[in-house]
Length: 140
Ligand code: GDP
Image (cartoon, rainbow, N blue to C red; front, side, top):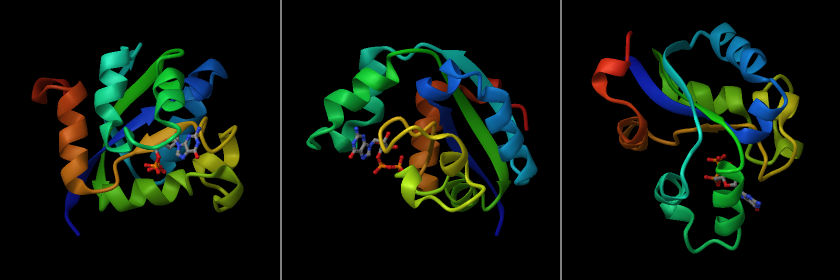
């Protein structure tokens, strides 16, 4: 497997509890390198676009409201098989189903407020990175 990049968000429930450093520690200890990182307040437009695939789901409004409720940290992670590896490190969407030692098992509040996002495919990773970073922001 080649070196890959994935897109990560540390969500508002985690930044509110000062968990950015703790989550970054789990990421780095898993062998993923944080090659770009920025703390932002997502606009409603950015959140709606980012989660457009979920527009028809009943939780879409709640999700957009949550993602704009406080600061998030957007990141680019790099490493061997980074997309799949980060999904593993994050754990299942619902923290009750997440494996021990995963970020969501350790820190998530609920299925909605679940502390982190990670791309689900290399194609989506590329699109998501492009929504928030320019090539010059990414120092590998
Ligand atoms: P992920 O890839 O593991 O983040 O999960 P999904 O792509 O299925 O869902 C995207 C995000 O929507 C999740 O990370 C949650 O923040 C949120 N979400 C998913 N399912 C639910 C739900 O049943 N209720 C609420 N409130 N939010 C949800």
